[in-house]
Image (cartoon, rainbow, N blue to C red; front, side, top):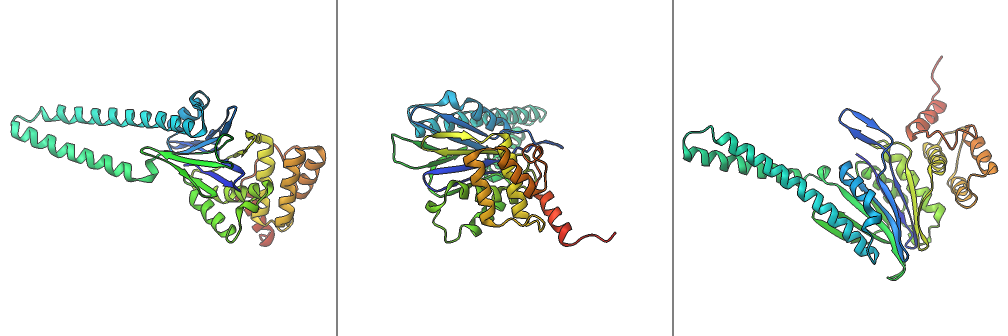
Length: 319
């Protein structure tokens, strides 16, 4: 499970992905689900949700897949993914068919052998079709980028096994946390012309959507935050990501002792984006959030922890 979120005003975009990776009964918050790429005339961020092996193969080779344009680069990444998935399922089905023929050899009657193979092959094809139709089994990718030789503005592409399309909405959601982030952004962006949103606004809405998405199973950890604009694509770095996530976590949880308003939160975001983590900015943030200057940018507090703090203040437990 995972989450990938993108919010754009048409000229710049914010992308956020979580860090949680599950492997059987274990999980870690050290996953990488987004990669930045920049060429002379185009660049962007690619992120994915689904099978970790498929995602990592595309992310780790994206710079080697670059073509002459953004669209051609996306098509190259898509072709790599298609070939990888096709190879896997071809080998899987061939292995299963070998098992069926091996079992059929134990049947003496040739007619019964053929009937056994026919039934088992049909069952296998039905199982494969059912597997492919389940969205949870599909690995999805999104690319948010720019191309100065093409039409101006942010361009978004989405692809999975069997589909590649350009997307024209101002928001993208991938993974298990998509429903929570979708509900938040649909509610909060009602009636807003997203072209009027500034960079701090984009971060504000995307980070709040991320906070809610962490309530879904398999979503969490310090997020990767990336930005795309006509001049290039970049990630904000670990410390900035922790600061911004802690800030919006406290805001979204409505912690009474902190009492952040929309405008105050956006103001803090604007300071972080424009000034960086100067001693003054860190001091103001740590004082407001009740954290030390050392921890505000190094220790990530999940949204659920901020919400618990808020509720404990509202409804203190009897001693």
